[in-house]
Image 1 (cartoon, rainbow over the protein chains, first blue to last red):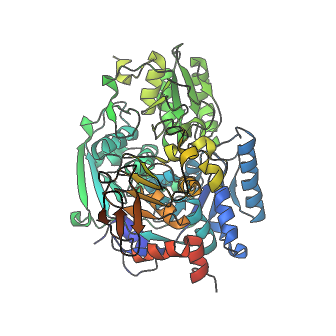
Image 2 (image 1 turned 120 degrees about the vertical axis):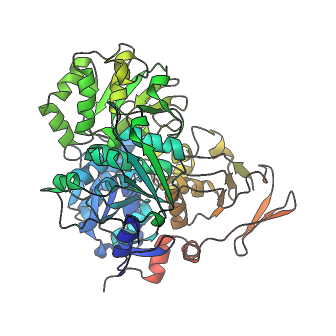
Image 3 (image 1 turned 60 degrees about the vertical axis):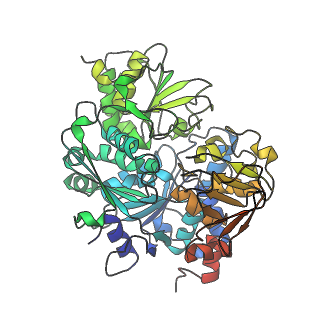
Length: 421
Length: 162
């Protein structure tokens, strides 16, 4: 009897049966993703192997997303070096600006992520594809390089923790609140070295977009993967976009296979904010009275069309508080296009928000919204570490898109229910 | 040698802030290690220094730039109560030795220590104490002995098409 992680890793290691937690296995990977920060070091290491003619180019995906459009000469040189590598090795799955977006959104939209697949990415939020039933995890540049040459990578098979969230979610409670609630409970090392699996009626009722937010932030509890068993919503999404065949993998449903089981009542989860400087420092948005300088809507965590719709609905006919700068960054060109077609971008512009094309940008303190000393930002992103979005004495408060939009209107961290009372 | 002590949950943004991620060169990265939180680190750190930390060291980003910056700065070992998973793998894969041991309260920054990897002993010369640690699994020791994953693949001809 096995978990999803044990089954996928067992199959990819060429075993007849599932792998066992604790075992070290050598697995064939389906895709290897690198971005503009991790890609150049990966190709440099790859060339040190001296096996350039063996590159598994069909497995390699290259996305320029972190410092795009390039923020300075150094990042432009880095992007150019990555572009040159992609040309030299004839990488077909290459995404430059104007045609891609934030790497994880691209991996999902363009059909790389699918149930049962083993995907590695030189970016920690690669765990996002667990929302589609994949085992996907972040690796370093050296590991990406090794897999480019060999098509394989070693894994220590993780123990799995089961999270069951049953019940009905309240208005303005999203996937973000579920995962912040869980991290607030188990802590930022609560899932260290482990895989997470998510079950329950609340998870089943979520859109795929909200599920991606949950899997995306599995790493913020230290997890190796955050997997949600795929259902009809996932299969419908994949229809017409998935590359190749896939096989959905499910756990055997035996409680003893899990190292630990956590249960939560969905009705008790409220719009939640993670205060500086760790994602585990959670509090209900309604209990905070924190003035903000910036409101950021975007990222691989919450930059999808569903997120933009939630925020636009609250901002429609309203104005961003005169003390606040609001920044809206759709996670991909496709999301951007869709948001234009639906009139969401017009709503943001009318409200006085700044809107730009997809980039990781300010989420990691790169550009397009870096914070000054003493400034506070309420953000739909995933990390609120010291100096994450800029000056070491700036602060990031993590929240869902509805809280960010409501806070942009009032100028302080706000539970959206307060606006609609 | 000097010991640099850190608390729990030291994230990779602290180890090497994102604004310096326009190079993968260990020496260049080392010049900005802990730039935001310990501005004097890069000036004072010396070859052979050791980092001693609490739980979940290296959490956050997958940037291999973090262990590269430490290696480039001359750090020869990181001892922590526990490590974030990707940082752990990255360090082993680039040949930076890690020790998982709960000795945070036993070692002062001014102590002199010796590490014997073969028999799993950290010797505190200042206090005249020995601390045992569990050696890494055999496979990871082999990776470290090879000098990292790339050398290991070269030596073992892993995954070569034939």
